[in-house]
Length: 343
Ligand SMILES: [Zn+2]
Image (tube, rainbow, N blue to C red; front, side, top):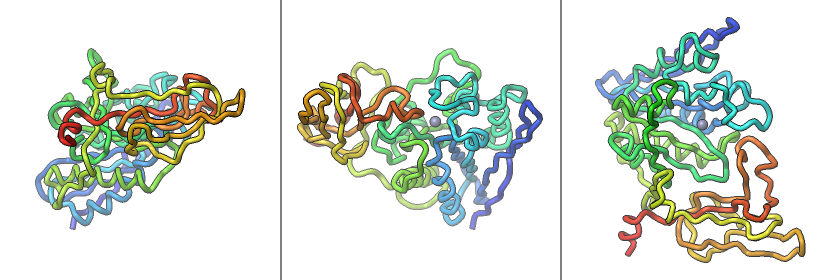
């Protein structure tokens, strides 16, 4: 049986306070990859922390090659602050990070701001020893869970065994030499990383934790670190490239045709919907008529529910009262290859 050791990455903050970020290392005792699973770089994105707690038990019983490094609370100060970054106050968007967005600080700085110091401590104690990375995040409840990856090499292979319906391909960042994401740190050094967004933030849901655990286990199996079959999704992945005009033609935004209260029809993001399927209705606030909202195409719910920018940090932005033009849903048609297979 593999052995688990608890250790800490220790950072000294600018005011002299010591932060001790706990992590596990599980060693099979045999040669193999070193897999990092890291969660809560943003303090309000906590689904991955429970994924890691469960994955530790899976590893202890099943790891046959390599070692696994598990960091459930990467940004411990932000977790304790109960917000994505330590500098944010009520309703402040992620973009107001002032250098405290941990996932723009890798590999950290020994003499930087407090977030950079925590990243640096983690890099030295954990990250630099690892050859593969699964980075667990969360975004708002209005966007489907998704794998974010590069459409090449190890990152693409990892995305296609993770078992999350949506895969969003992202290009490598350009001209940015310091303060990159942990994914870029790995992918730019041929180590291989994906990010999984387990929606939403702020809560821990059984279904999402199960998805994250399956992804971590699938990755370990694909690297030969555990035995067993990779558990795939039913049907095909829905893949698209961020910012691709081609792929955007498969994406259909459904906006409120009038103002009023949007009432969802009990669907969830990632659900399959048929063309013409009922998605919900609006109770108009001028004449109290009911306006039905339906899907224009056959596809998967990428976004669902009335929302506006910064709905991940502010309750009014999540309010179901829609102005005309507010986003109600987005449906993405299957990849062309998927449609060919279906014919
Ligand atoms: Zn995040």
